[in-house]
Length: 152
Image (cartoon, rainbow, N blue to C red):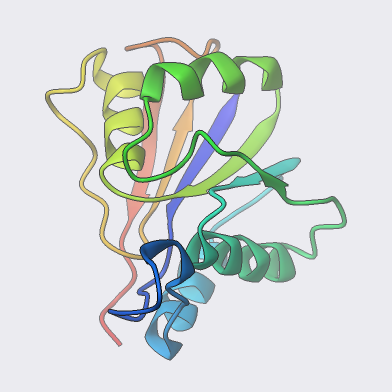
């Protein structure tokens, strides 16, 4: 299985609610730069928050993704990585892109690679991690790459 973890691009600092914060122009540039490294994505999953939905849509455009982006309620900033792993397990053998937020996405990546949450992946806005492995289990995935978009 290949799991791509993409942190949403930079978002505006304020909106009516945190969930409604939209991407800035810089956030769109960050997303485009990172999404250019994606390959063979069969499914796109995204947090329900606006900035993640916009990031997923941009990544889908760059990939010429013909499928539907799946909104997953368990991918918000404070979500439980264990619940995410149970859900992601159904994509065995596929290449999946998950668009989400810190601290969740860093903790999920750290748990999959290191087997614990004490060493989360360091992901700035727009960062892209590529993980691969035979099973969606703690400590059994390999960090193939971690890319951070260049400052704009």
